[in-house]
Length: 228
Length: 276
Image 1 (spheres, rainbow over the protein chains, first blue to last red):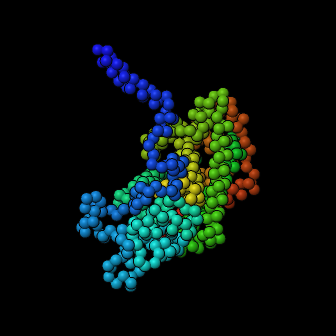
Image 2: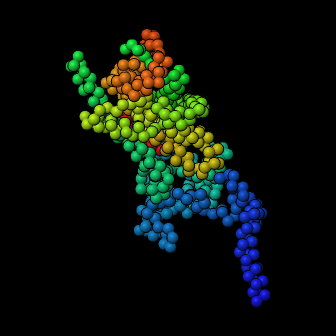
Image 3: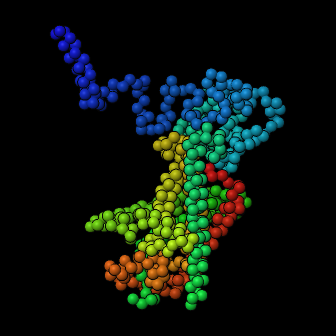
């Protein structure tokens, strides 16, 4: 009996005392958090540290939004019917096996990629970022375009001091209102349609409103002139 | 009260805010449209007015800074307008631009009036469409300011936001600018210049005062309220000098022409641009 009481007391102490203690000494408790390294907390005040833990340094880091629509990822990711083109983003030569490749221009296949601000405004050529042959897929481990090092190897050629976060700016962004954008960059897609609806809605309300005011005032004035 | 008497509608400071906003807005619209359309033949020609793409960007950034400063001053001014004695009335009263239930009622009445189903709403000092004009700028300006600053300082911005937020910022900046420009150059200019009761120009924002007869016709509740409170004599204002009228007529019509020019070319060449 006495022993049961003691066990109950111990249990009660654990159930009530521990949470109370955790609340009272929250700072101390949080400090007990198991972390992998000393620079982990650095992230809390800077979105892009430029530092990478070993377990973080792997392809696909910081590419949460870019993908190929219609491509299944998971158990059978590379099905030939699953995608209009084979995924070449992990090859060391992404154009491997393309016939008459030497005679083609980039825009022959990558037409949409030649319409972005970097190409149109800054007059950059493809090679200035993507480099010479062979052009490695952007997820190939040793590619300069790999998000691990893109900011340092590519972006900072012009944008001095660019960080990994800065490099996650999507240069070849999908057309903002498209289904591609919906699956690969949803925030861009919804922002676009929100602004389009706002623009169309405002004008669809105020243009007929103005026309009606104009018509109505015109006839009111004419009526008045007749009375005089 | 004589029929030619004028009553004050906008203070000198109000008019100064409007003038500064007008000039900066037109410069931003010009440099911004010039940059947006720089890949089209018209854009290339048009942007040369501002000294080319790079100079237009420089002007756009500095004038943007000026607008932010102006908005900040305006915010401080707004705080000073809240009366400590009667904060409720100064915020939600008829002299305030804060929308209230009356505006919804006026909107409904005005729709009925469009189709001759009822009388025109008895408007007070600010009509609902005038309030919309104000609040459209009020929320548009901070949005353009924040996205604009992000785009001027992309490196710094990407420390606070992930880098792909710059894609969103660029889209928002353009879309909001297009919205503002089309609203101002279509709706606001129509209300200010072209609608029959204000043609050739609604002078209130430049003269600062309106003819009491006109006010009686359009804003009867306002005049009545002033009369009831005995403030009508207090609100009396002088009519603007002839030279001043000439100046603001020329200025107003230049702005109108500039706006229509931008808008027409913007629509004609719209196939050369994307919103992002």
